Length: 133
Ligand code: THU
Image 1 (cartoon, rainbow, N blue to C red):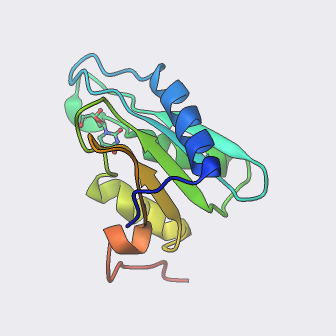
Image 2 (tube, rainbow, N blue to C red):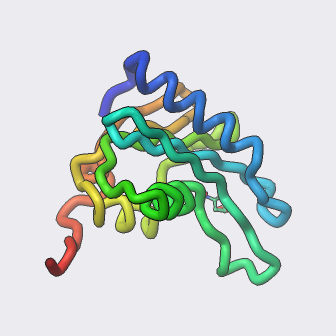
Image 3 (tube, helix red, strand yellow):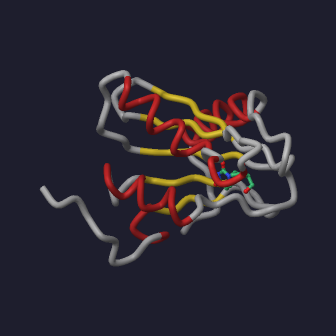
């Protein structure tokens, strides 16, 4: 876990903050944006999309993964996650599992009240269950 932010991570976090503007969160009012970097020049965005049937809520991270996979990309180097000021917005357990599906070594940058934290999926989800292929 690192508190120093590389410039490419700062740019990705900025994209995540932009995506957060489009979050649909009328129930929790907790808006989140995610930016997923393939590492070879492509960035895919996501925001959380809530529903009146609360359990159907989609997190920003999984929306970004779905957007990227739909476009034909499956290799991901880094994801940046931006939440509201004043709270830790690390990926939830379900999103950690979905990120691990594609790359347990993926870098994860997320916002906290003390500034962005840089870590990896493997650090957030140790001993993860992997693909059966
Ligand atoms: N949420 C995300 O989109 N990503 C996270 O990393 C944390 C939680 C969303 C889900 C829900 O719409 C709202 O934040 C409150 O949990």
